[in-house]
Image 1: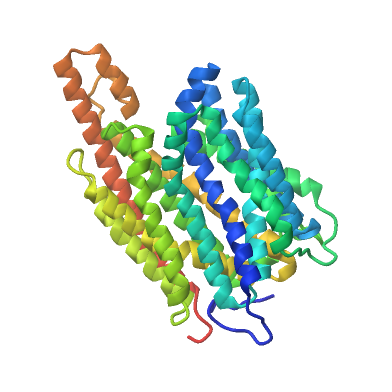
Image 2: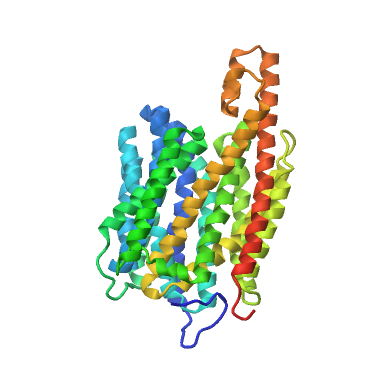
Length: 503
């Protein structure tokens, strides 16, 4: 098993990629961009979907969540499947399925049909990132080039979050809500036409049969955990949500035990014996834990405290994507001179500074502080995303590239869901403590407080809303401070455990 952590090192006998590989990377970057763009656009389309299809609040929730659930739950399976049938073949099959499901979603006659189409999109979407990263590992065997290529993929994903509000807002103002789902169709069509020409086909030699029992166990582990964490973030730690997480953890234990016994496991747990691989996976998990949790808090602050629409909030947060793009593109250059552990650690310290800036956000005033803090946070996390992903992919043997890529995609999904639940709960706890003396209808959350003002005289409603917004902002400030502290802790751990071989 390869264990090099110096991503800039050049191994004997390795060939450098040429124009064909770089052109192929451009093709791979498009579905990577689409993966993040699609979710942003879907959120913007929800009001129109609810109006035109008569969808209730539960159906609207499932239109968004079913995609995320099945995407997260299917990643490990798709990574292992790509190792067996071929990474390019899986990517093209997924692209075709995603395109068809997107058309079904765009022209869905009912909310139920739209939910079903979104479920298909989630399963098809799970083929994308594991296949993309595994193909990058095959196409770019030179470590320096591979690091740069993965940085470009990370930048493309971040670019989708910036383009999403702009593209979605433009489409929804001029066309119907279904146009938001058609964005992916030309991208997938282009991939299906050019992919067979530019992308190589690779599969593991003699990989063995796909562990179907392991597939079911992985779904039974990931889906309840993601579902429970999402419900905890939205509704608090209700017994049903906590039970779902517990069931998922129990199934995860059974899954791990089974994988250890199999000769051809769905997930080769021996990969974690490589310290660089293990540290990189944990870093991805924890880094995205903080990022998604804080991004959730920022979105809530912009919409509930500052009164912005989802589109306006998306536009104010779009500059942060520029920070990720800059950080992920700059990191491959720096890591040639300094070990990846130090680059990641320095980036996390920069992010901690950004969170310190966010801790100074107030109820009123300009949004410059929030935008500046978000950009600094993202610029520091860009190197982590690019280099940690590169280490995971580069540490795995070629025959396990798909499975390793799936792990590098699953860890952020689980970390992000947990971060939203935990850091969201911190804001809720602070809010409820500060609002203990308020009218009962306003004590639970800021959304309830906004609704409660309708039943009060104007002066009393204004005072209640001012108090509620101040309480939420205090929770936001505490969350930012906690995020800063977590970034420092993670940075120290990464520098300590992810040592360069030359040290």
